[in-house]
Length: 536
Image 1 (tube, rainbow, N blue to C red):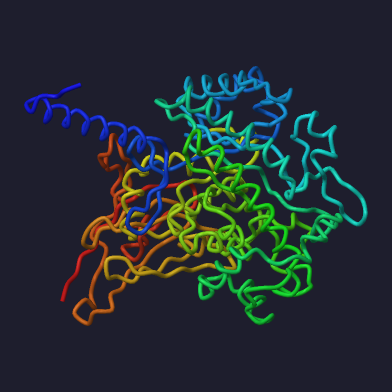
Image 2: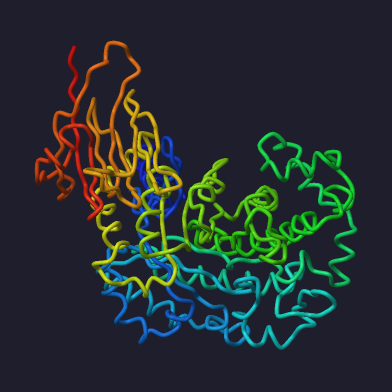
């Protein structure tokens, strides 16, 4: 076929526009993007803050059960529901897929203007394999199990190629279906691949096959990764490797020592290889963010008392060495020290998403710290159906954060936002914004002191700040000698409507302790703006 010289530029332009359009379509899918000081979830071209909740394990297995819940979930300020999808319901007969439940959940979510994060409960859930189809459970020869203390348990071996292939095929089929029915709506934001994986009851699989693998050489790709990232490895992992001579070759006990921690590293590698392969199969069909979550252990807990091999902070580097299909690692955080554990996962390029945590009053406080101090892009308490009263604390926090979400996301990228989480053990916090030192403490006036305080603060202009929360107060100082004298010019409570600030009461007198503090009282979550003045 011949093309005239006049037609060629037009065809080239059309081809360029088509390529640009295809690229735009590809980038319009939900994805993670590094923007300034933070990594954010981008949905329909804009940063999206997940204010979510995870359902009880079995709630979403019935569309009739779910139908009345959606309006109540939306009514408490959720914009995203985190919910399981069990392999047993998706592929009840090998090779035959049933997506009725998926389609029904998507339809119900759209009707309530909600988004979804699906949890793929397949080979593992909470260190066991109860969500596998019965045709998998009935064939332990084809789908071998882990051996703990001489006994096979209901836990599929991560070293099994047959199990990995079956899981990956089902997940790829699910993701292909999601792409076919959700490519324009983007109801599904992300996928969690498996759930809280690891061996319970012992530090590693002790089957004959696992014993042989443990006494075989450590994979060369793992050794290369450790060597290339030595200085940034998690301290506990680096210390273990250093203690054994930073070896690049040898068996697992030779390289990491013959301890239960070496067992945990061994299991982490095998779980990670399996799950990266499953995630990669899904991404080849529908490329949206995918993550792995963690049943957190206390620092001195013995592997096996928690699922040994899951992406605990000290073995996340092992998981990273095993593949790139998992985009980030997330904590299921019920431990009391929320600040400590949040920091363990918001590190080395791993953004913070909280897929499962406490709700109620603790969740109402912790969400401010997660999205403010740690630039988290999402928060999701477990058993959210138990907290659906729109008057309870979590709903109030969600409504306040949702109202300021666009400006909050902008300040995450700028890095000029902080979150605070105060209690009797940690009654103060200090940080610098706009060249000023902010001194934050639990609110107190006339001898009445709040039990706790929480919120976030961002710099919105020269000597101007926006904050939200309750139970804390702020004072300001400057290190510059010329700024020795400064005070509070005004404090306004208010709200945002269509992105515009609508001021309410001008707070003065008792509400700012006679001009001494920027106060957030303990009765309710407030959103406030403060302006400062300076004088000689």
